[in-house]
Image (cartoon, rainbow, N blue to C red):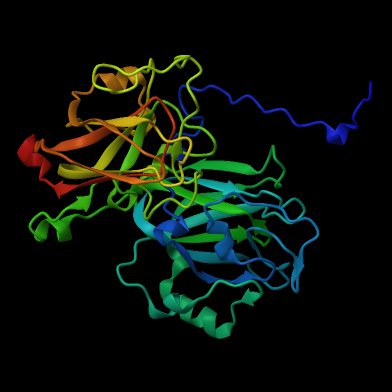
Length: 402
């Protein structure tokens, strides 16, 4: 028989480690520095080799073998030139939504001989954005000039509160590229200063935290309906049965419609699914198992309408869904994700009875129950993918409920 050369042999799939709790709890929280939420670079001292805005991309960093630009090797991240003047490089980021930061994920993927050796982060809450910050455009080849430095002095960013003291980073190999730094502060920030010592490259920066959401504008408008589950309004995924294929339950709450199957929540096929599917007395297919996700709303509210969007899920959408709600205490970060047993202990009531789902479509359901809720549980039958979940309703004063 013929033995194939090693490079022709297909790579086997790696078994995913089973964990009851995520190794890094803050990764379950929203990324406040996501450009999908509006985060962007406002200022950078030097981005000669690669633009600082790349560092905020939602998608993982990639390597392009043999690709060069007029400035040097193409890199997917922020890379400054080799420092040959006093000081160190740094940049200012406006977060997509203000929030209390609980942790940083700094990724140096593919920056092996050019990675940043040390990094620190400072933060502030600015009520008024200086005009010059709105004018900055993050582009490869840029470096700040004397006039830029003179304007940025107004921020006094070097005096902002230190959120992350200088930490060592490792080169961007697969086993050393990811760095997770928890943050012990409740300070709410909408701007960050990222300091790199003294220069080099970072592939990605994720800023995970709890969103500061204000509903005063909405409540002033006679309780106009808002998406109570939206990330920008403080919605958070706090429990789930599983997630697979690079997706995550928190993506259900992102702005806009999904951009692909990777931009949503998808679970694997049930290994113990029935060999032959049969309908029950109500015409619904019988399944022995289901998947679920629990969303903690940004604030308590009375739900008027629900939207379940299966955009991009064409051969892998759930057969149907059920939505329940309850009024319960806020879930602490160290309790995320809730176990199925903890989730079952909540006082759930049905908001939308089991309803059919079709592929690649929006589905709207009216909610008749007008009791305030703080959490919703979306159950899908039996598995599959959902792109977005919208919980339209009116915020309520929780004190009146309690």
